[in-house]
Length: 396
Ligand SMILES: Cc1ncc(COP(=O)(O)O)c(C=O)c1O
Image 1 (cartoon, rainbow, N blue to C red):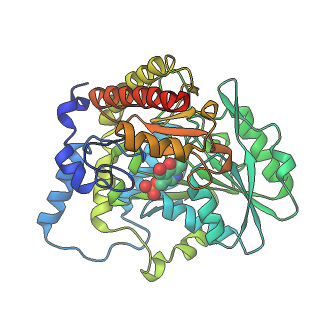
Image 2 (image 1 turned 60 degrees about the horizontal axis):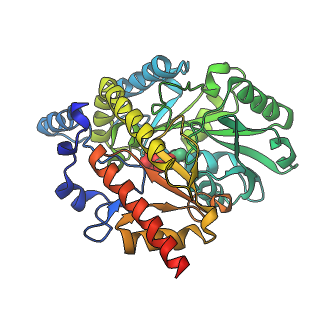
Image 3 (image 1 turned 180 degrees about the vertical axis):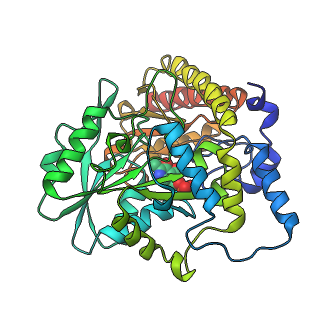
C-alpha cells in the first residue's frame, strides 16, 4: 500500500511530536512499538481542511453541542460503518474518547457504586470509575474460541453494581463480541438495572476475517442504558487533536451527560478546528480502508514471526493494531522484561500488569504494529534478539 511504506514514516517529526511512550520519549536508537498510535501521518485531507479553516481568520465560539454538520457526519458514519442508528441530536462531539469516558462515569456513578471493569482492559475504564468515586470490581476477561467469554459475568454483580465497562473491540486482547453475548449482556443490565459504558474507539480497525457487531445494532430501545464513546485517534492518527464523541439512544441519559460535560457553560467542549479536522477524518474512510489492508499484512507477519519465538504465546487479534503476548514462561514480571528489552535490544513495548491493563495482564506484553513493514521487521528482530539474550543470561 503506497501510503504505508517506510518512506511515509517521518522519524524526524515523530521524534519531536510523538509522546506517550513513543518516539519523543525513548532514547535515541530505541524503536517504540508502545502506545496505540500510528507511525504514519494523518490523511492529507485532515491537514488541508485545518489550513483552510485557519485562512478564514476567525476562531469564534462554536455551538455548545458541536457543529451541526459534524454531528450529522458522525451520525452518518455510525450508520454506514457500523449499523448504529443514532439521531444526530443525541451525539455530543467531545475532546477525546478519554474525556467521554470520564463524563459518562461522572454522570452515572456515585461514590460507593461499583463498576465492573474487565481485567485486562485499557486503564481508562478503571481511572474514569475511580475519578467518579466508584469502586472497581475486576472481571477476569478470557477469550474462548476467538471471542470474549462472558459466561461468569453475572457472578460479579452485587447490589451496588451500577455500570459495566464494555470495550468493543477489546484493547489489549484484540477480540470482538458475538451478537448473542451482547444480547446476554443487555439482558443482565435489564435484570439488575445497570448501565453500560460502551467504548467503540477501535471499531474501525477490524480485520477482513472478522466481523464487528455493535451492541447498538441490537436496537435503540434495548440500549436505553448504554452510553457510547468513539474517538478519532486510532482510525485516523490524530490523537493529539483530542477528537471524540459521546452518543446515546436515550434522550434523558444524553441530557444528563451533556450537563456533566460542562459544554453548556463553555467550561467543556471540543475546539472548532478539531471539529473541522474531525469532519475531514470522516471523509477519509478510503484512507482507513487502505490502512486496514496494510495492518492486516502486518498482523499476519507478526503472527508468522511470533510462531517461531517459543517462549511467547499469542492469539492473532481480530481487531485493533495491537498484539497481546503471553511471556509468563519467562517467570518474571513483564516490566522486568520490557526494561531488559529496551536497554539490551533497543525495543520498547508496553508491559502488562496493574498500571496499564490490570493485574490479569501480568506476564504479558503489548506490541503496536501500526508502523511500516521495515520498522516492524526490525522491531521483531530486536524482540528475537532480546529473547536470545535473556535466555543466555538465565543460563549463565
Ligand atoms: C480502549 C480505548 N479507549 C480510549 C482510548 C483513548 O482515546 P482518546 O485518544 O480518544 O482519548 C484508547 C487509547 O488507546 C483506547 O485504547
